Amino acid sequence: MSSTAEAPAVPEAPETAQKSLRLGIFGGGTVGGGIVEIIQQKAKYFNELTTQNIDVRKICVRDASKPRDFTVPSTTEIVTNYDDILNDDEIDVVVEVMGGTTDAKDIVFSALRKGKDVVTANKALIAAYLPEIEAILEEVNSDGSRVEFRYEAAVCGGIPVIRSLQSDFVGDEVSMISGIINGCTNFMLTAMDRDGKSYDEALAEASELGYAEADPTLDVGGFDARSKLKILMRLAYGIEVDEEEIDCRGITDLTTVDFDYAKKLGGTIKLLGVAERVEEGKIAAFVSPCYVTADDPLFAVIGATNAIEILSKNLQSSTYIGQGAGRFPTANSCIN
Image (cartoon, rainbow, N blue to C red; front, top):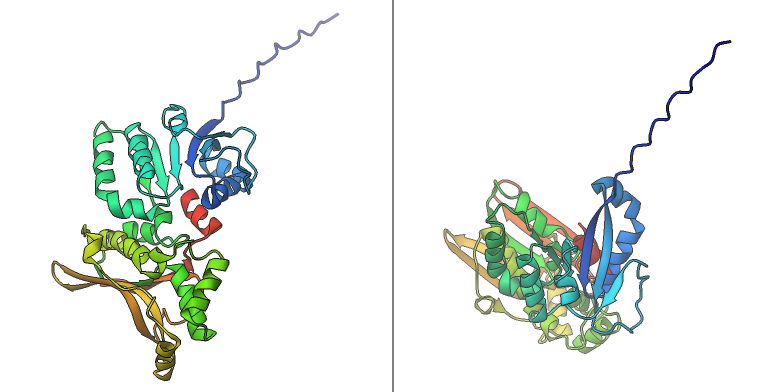
């Protein structure tokens, strides 16, 4: 009789541990919640794209007992102490969407010095401290590290204008930037122009819909747009300017009479941020209500939409239009 020996069992290869990209988010409000929701909704796709599991490890908030308008993942810890994220060596990326320039500055500076990548949507922080942030990056990366700082969401929410200025105009020469870069004021001006509303009526509607802050001064005074324009000028022209040097006029003095005259001329009024190269080494910049003709690309931009037109030597005219604020447009830029 012949006997058949059984082949030895082949041991199964051990499963490769799934790599994780661990996030610590500062701010559990509108944008922070949007980031968490997008990560949850697209977890499978992100995993396939990056071969990593994007893990929201901790979210730092002011009040841990406050109900959230998003589902907190079971593996996510809600904390109230900044150091719970900053001193956690397992966290790879810090996402700052809490706003302000005091605590936010300390958080961003500390995170970068600890070797954590940082993503922020904080335009005021960028406008005030970008040179200092770049100096910290140069210092921490001097040993060959690749710590990164990204801020696409800081200007015009969901419009990818920062990335475009960083990559698409490298061989070009920008001559002018002109844009509607504040959604609240554009919404108000649309209501005054199209619906014949007074300034106070337009502001009340903007507040009711959440486009205006409780104190709308930064929006209606043009200061929010000025901060964004300063950031765009640095990217387009490589210059650092004091915000106070940019002439700024808001929309508080506009009346329905101004729009009546604009209509008679065939145009409308928009709050624009403009920076133009007037001669070699000199840039003129301002934020102000401007008369816009009907054939201008910015004429048809209505509501809370933002738009930026960039004139340059090679591409000539490039226009970017999209949602400048809101939960998912801003969160989308942070995710990217």
